[in-house]
Amino acid sequence: MANHKSAIKRHKQSLKRAARNRAARTRIKNVVKAVRLAVQNQDREGAATALVTANSVLDKYAGKAVHWKNAARKMSRLARAVNTMDA
Image (cartoon, rainbow, N blue to C red; front, side, top):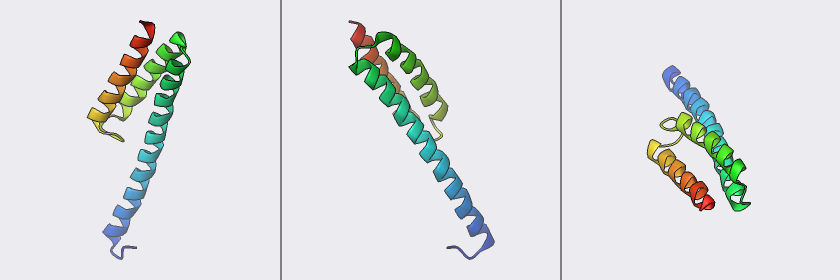
């Protein structure tokens, strides 16, 4: 553990940020899983609804908890999966 006052503060901040990022990444994993599950079950309406939710969550956390390119790639692949299901 750090000894200086500023280092102690930085450590507390890093713990806070890590917890926030962990929660965000968990939420992202869950919404992505919901879309993939709906696609797997051939549930068109459920997949479309889950995709809207997933895009919203990914947009919210892009650049915060995940890299923006990672978020964009996930959105693109999920949209492609939902759109090819209709074909």
